[in-house]
Amino acid sequence: MLFRQAEISGARTITLPRHHDERGSFGRIFDRERFADNGISCNFVQASISRTSYAGTLRGLHFQRFPHAEAKLVHCLRGEMYDVICDLRPDSPTYLKHQSFYLNCSDNEMIFIPPGCAHGFMTLSDDVEVLYAMSDIYAPDHAMGLRFDDPVLGISWPRPVAHISTRDLEWPKYKDSKHHDRIK
Image (tube, rainbow, N blue to C red; front, side, top):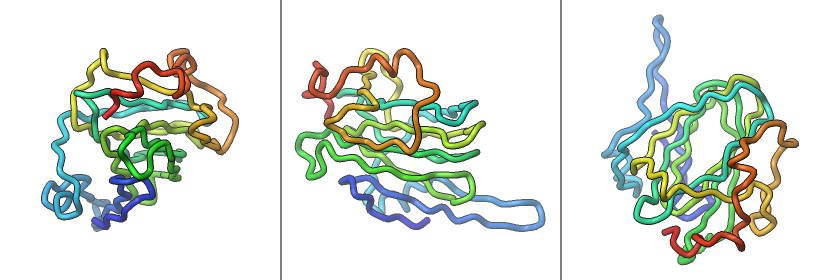
């Protein structure tokens, strides 16, 4: 595993090694000691797979408030996606900054997102599958989101949004969010 510091404080890109033979390939996505050696100390307690049918679908921006703020690992299993992290931690040197990543199923790249950051992605191909691992349980009363087009965040998505849930359309902008002071 190759860990690289991302622009967002505490975030990492992780390149996964793949071992190939006549049967196919094998790759490890988590190794607690390797993660700890690279400054990531968290226990992942939940994992989910998102399947998205159509290109241009936007999911996010999602996060959980304290005390259920969660770290995430994000890995594209099929297709291509544009992944975005927004730092919502007031004490962070990258507060209100965002970083984007192009992920696909061939690059063996994974993103580590620290607690206190919002996450979203846009699919760039049909039939995208994304694996998430989270460091806290899903807590519906603490699940929050922000508008994908919030001018404070200034995200430039690579294409127009073709599909988005009603819930994601109804998230507030950052300045209108009543919970932004309790994110960390």
